Length: 264
Image 1 (tube, rainbow, N blue to C red):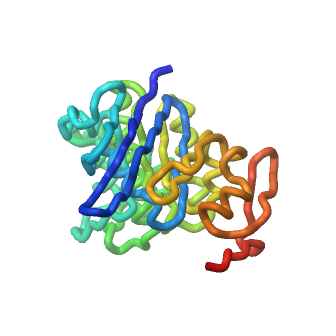
Image 2: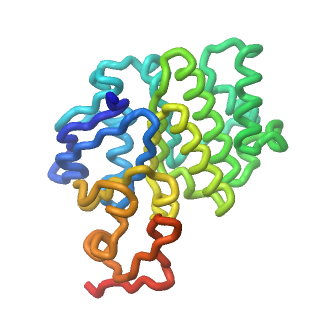
């Protein structure tokens, strides 16, 4: 099965600093992939390169077999959707209006039922008439997630399975909504969407991902299933902590309270 998105020898330099170097990545339709790593590992840089927000200084990203750089903005929006880590909206748009923005230029009468469906899925119906700036950070994040899902649905209805990119999507969410978000991502993958998420919580990554890319100092330190990547040795080498890795229903888990930082 052809990959929806591929990166070949991907690199990003700014001045003398190498933010990312020699990264290879491939994600197929219906696959969920988590990107994990310590602060400064290059995770957000990789996400911005995969989304087209940044142009690489080395290597190439291909989306559905075509160079990402060849996509004009409107065509790119129909094939990939991005939930950014920080989205600031100061104008008094309601939640309903924010979500409908995901439909682009689609007529209101056609877009509204789709927006209604997203509001129900994310559990935002009670807040649909609230102005976005009056909501908590987590509620705003969920509204933007609904908008991105609507954009994805509109594009996929015309062009088939696309790419959903989630940059630290759970950072503002409580535990219930963290679980809901990754489960929604997995449901999209079951319909053929390729889903890539940056996640800080390794337990959440193990629950979400078919495969995990571990980044360290701008390079891929490990890649494979959660069982292959979340190991005692990886945690020592990459995150600089000593801890045991347990297993629950065949999936690895780590206990933060059992971790010990390696002395520098």
